[in-house]
Length: 334
Image (tube, rainbow, N blue to C red):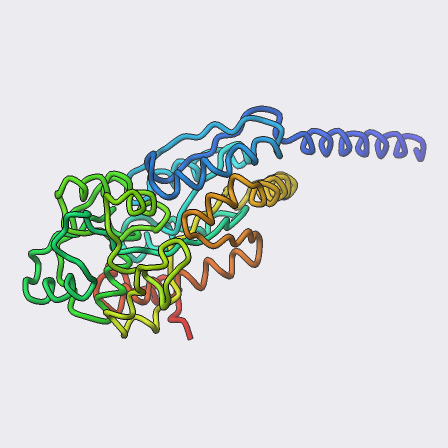
């Protein structure tokens, strides 16, 4: 009997080793990285900068798929519907943290594991180079004098432009008409064609056009100027009341389903930690004015929670939220 039990134990141990070895081989094939926004936007730019180094670290190709729509809800749902094996991950931005209060989707990053919060950006208020607005003060004065008549480029409810607009609205008169586009890239292109008067955007999406002289930045959404655009004043010069909500900005990260096996998560975490130190990625982040964060796990989850609290309650306080954050278990930040 003991001999039989010993043989069974040996078989089980061998099976366990085989299972562990198979899991350790992840990835055995190409991996799919789903980008939340369209080509040319800030999230796409960050994803494509880090992707080559992540491929090298993983030892397998990462196929990049742009799947925009629904202020990021379509791509988030797509990754959530994929098998929990780590072969499909999300190159995401901040948008899902706002979807529940905006009535867009019940999914937020609470259903995902943060492989890496790669970095965060700073917003900028951009206008066409030929715009009549020379300063943020002039734009704000025109908005106040002509409520509802000034057109703002947007990416839909919960997107970065609408959130910045809500933060401004909590500090000043800001009655504008938002025109939605399918991502920051298309919105900024439309602004260059004079389809809208201005657009809040991530500095990484607008910086090159600003440096090329096609756009002008009226303000950076920060309490001080930034190295990328040193001559552009902070928005608090025109709207001092915004200081209590800052610093604030978009963020970029890599996410998989929460129930992906721990060893697969660890492989992805390790690969993107290496990739976040690559020269191509760090150079892009510096050139775009973004701050590298390179955090994962509990530290990243704490960051996501705090960001959600601050932003959803700004939306609630300005009347922009469609669902009270408190009813969703999102408590007001202290």
